[in-house]
Image (cartoon, rainbow over all chains, first blue to last red; front, side, top):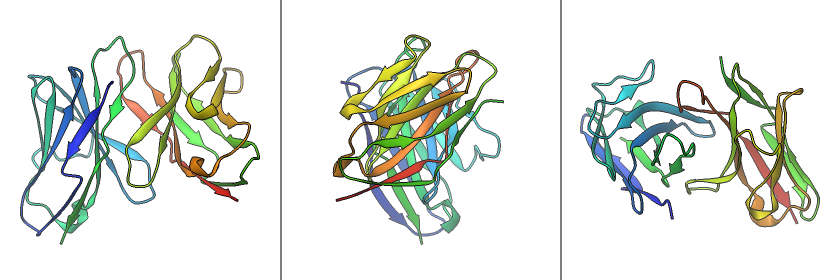
Length: 116
Length: 114
């Protein structure tokens, strides 16, 4: 149980276009989902936290107008990278948690974004 | 502020020998601590977690970690390395008092030689 999927696994896009990444909890309802970014050979950095039905909370330094997060249902959160540029190329990982009392996040396999 | 420090960026061992991946944490509150493993091009997998119960935590694949409050450490060990253990390992602290953010260490790459 507790499986989280991401789609797509890889995406290549042209500079200036927008890219949407989906994160789904397959066998549980996720009250909270998290989005992370991982640069090559570096650690994961939390970008934002989203709760179903409310606005996402962004970490300091993360542009909320550039990285749009929508958590429309208890099983789906989306991250849209708007007007992507080469510096946005990275590995984006989501995680999901079903209950605050159960302090564990389940991670998706990640999405590798390459902006040309 | 809460943080984790992974003392080694790379660790190399021979197959069949013990593994030790070191992690120190800093937390003003009683933390939850985790070890995650990341295989190339795959998602993070939870190895084990400490949440203020037993200080010696056993995880999957023969890994275990001991929470030592006096040393603020949470080192990951395995008695005998296997080739399949080669991966990136992250020590993670959770800010349990006011928030559920995970703070990741910088990672330790484990190489296992035959």
